[in-house]
Length: 395
Image 1 (tube, rainbow, N blue to C red):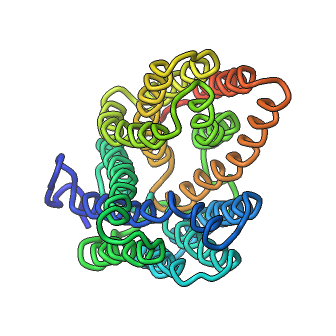
Image 2 (tube, rainbow, N blue to C red):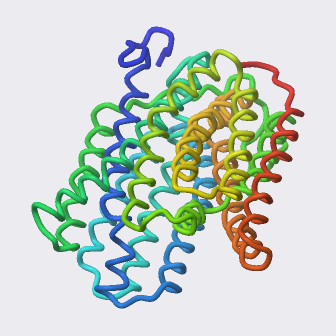
Image 3 (cartoon, rainbow, N blue to C red):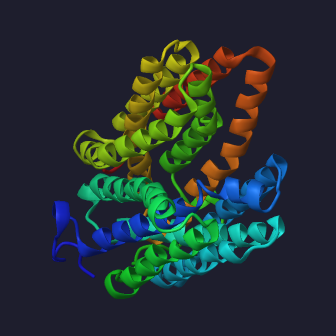
C-alpha cells in the first residue's frame, strides 16, 4: 500500500488510522462498561476480598505486558500485522462477556487473564501498523488521534454502564452481556476497514532476534529513559486516594476521573500534531516536566480546587506524551523492526509499573504522602535529563 496516494479522511489521516481509532474506541467502551463494576461484582456477588482482586489484576496486567513483547516480534517475523491484531481483539471480545456467567472468583481470574492475553497479542502489532499506514511527517497526529479515540471510549463506557443500570437493568450480569455489543462492532471494523500493509525488509541483513543489537543508541536511550520515568509513575489509584484525603467527597471521585479522561481525549491529538511540528523530544520532555510539577502539586494540595486543577493538568500531560512517545519509537526504528520495537517499549513500561506502585506505596506508608509524591517528581526530572541525550537522526 502506498501511503502517499491513499485517500485521506478525518484530520487528513488515511482510512487505516481512522478505522484503528474506531476499533480502540469501541473496545475501550466495552471494557469500561465492565471494569468499574467488576470490583463490586467480585466483592458483593462473589464474595472475593481485596487481596484476591489484587491477584487477579496483577496476573492479568503482567501477562499483557509480556505478550506485547512477543507479539510485536512475531508480527515482524511473519511480516503481517492484521491477523495478529484481529486474533487479539477477538479473544478479548469473546472472553469479556463471560464474566456474566462466572460463579466464583477464580473463574473471573481466568476470564480476565484471557482478556489481557488478547490485549497483549494485539497492542504492539497495532502500534506498528499505525506507523506503517501513515507518512512519517504525521506520526504524531496519527498516534495522538488513536489515543484520543481510546480515551473517548474510556469516557463513553462508564456513561453507557450508568445509563443501562439506571434505566434498563440493575443486574450486573446483564450489563456484562450487553458490553459485548461494542466489542463485536470493533471486530467488524477490523474485518471490513482495517487493511494490511507491506513490510519492506529491503536493505536489512540482520536476522530478527530478541536482542537490542539491531537497534541504534537513540532507541536504547529512549527505552532507558521510559523505564526510569515509569519507575516514578505510580498507579493513578494513589491520586484518587490523595483527592479523598484532600477532602473531595466520595461521590465526586468518579466525576474527577471522568474529567481526567475528557482532558486526555481533547489533548492527545493536539499534542501529537505539535510533536510533528516542533519535535518529539521537546514535547516529551515538556510533558514529563509537567508530570513532575503535577506530582509536586499533589504533595502540597490543600483544597478541592487544587485537586481539580491538578487533575486537569495531569490530563494534559497524557496528551503531550502517550501518543508522542509511540511516534518517537516509530521515528527511531526501521519499518521491519517496528513490531519488535513497540513490543520492547510496551514491555518496558509493563515491567516498571509494578515496582513503581510498590515503591510509591512503601514511601507513602513509611515516610508520608508528601515524600512519595516528591520522589515521583524527582524521578521524572531525572528521566527528562536522560532524554536530552538522544541524538535524533531523522524525524
